[in-house]
Image (cartoon, rainbow, N blue to C red):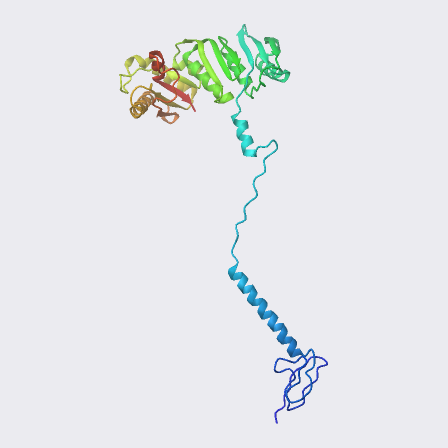
Length: 341
């Protein structure tokens, strides 16, 4: 006879030798054990094990099913909240960088080393800012204040470069300034190179929103070498070419010789820029301006200027400095210039 020996839970009865274990058919709770006629004891270890095993199997199946069917979901990001004032930071920065300068309405003239300011600005703060910049350059004893505050004007926005403007005026006492809104008009007598130079500087200091008016300036011929010595960073090189060609006429050699000596002394780097008027084909004008710029560079390098200090670039009919509708304007636009870098 075989003897069945199995572990049992605490307080669970042990089946007599030769009999089946209660609950072996999987229905231990409330049923008679096979061959005994006795009810199966409640809470036997085997029944509980089957119950827990069924729960575990079901849970595992559900987990596997969920992991197979689950897909990543793209959740939309919340919209960026506007910065204070109703603008995003990027929009606010763009608006700030694009804001046009507003000068007010005033004039500045120099006589005997003394600066006179006359006109109106929108606030006392703007008046003080203007006077502070002027006195920093000319000294408090050499600034005459005829400025008035007019609250009906648009808010005056001078920017942060007024001291540089007054510094330029101090160095070019023959010039005068008249500011009105976003417009800056120059007057007096200036060398041609200095006219183009101050126009470039005004855009650098106050942005491209500034309108520069040089129509009242009395323009004097000026050698490129003299323009360089006076601190101009952009100036015209007076050089003549054969029509439609890049051959430099001998009449221009004196201008270029003097410029070569000035460049060697100044030790500056720059671009030799070629321009044309708008007459003719744009592609042809571009090629011609490039060839002429290279010809001037080659001449200067051939007279001792460091080749590494100069580049040559043709701009064609871009960036006119005068009205292309008049013969005089077209003549001014056909030019070679030096642009300091």
